[in-house]
Length: 175
Image (cartoon, rainbow, N blue to C red; front, top):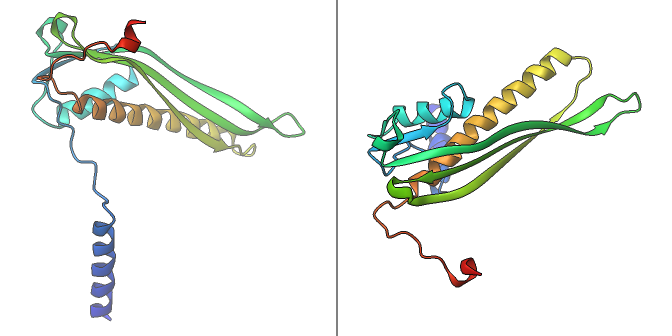
């Protein structure tokens, strides 16, 4: 029986490796120093700073003039929509949204990532018999969306090539 289990685990492991699955890994930003321009109490700032400090050689600085690049959170919001009500006027489902707009610039105003936005959405079915649990679930889902947005922002920053020449405006941009 032990040999059968080992064979099954081996086959499943090989199948998983063959499909291209790979763990996300650590975040390695292409900058030695980095500044995050948002309040330290912002949940997305906490997630960004924790991820940067925990991985790679990038050092967070508190003065934007000392940074090779700076991330600015231009706008951040979360909202809840109730798309469906039952016959008693109670919510049947919730749509949660988290939106963040950001940009990444370098010294002398060089733009690495122009103002860009992320919108994350989650769906929750309502249970009118467990209102407190439902509220906790909404708070937990928003927190999860903030952490997810932070990881997506860091992945975009990882793709920056600081040594590449700045992009030249195309003809379409000049019109």
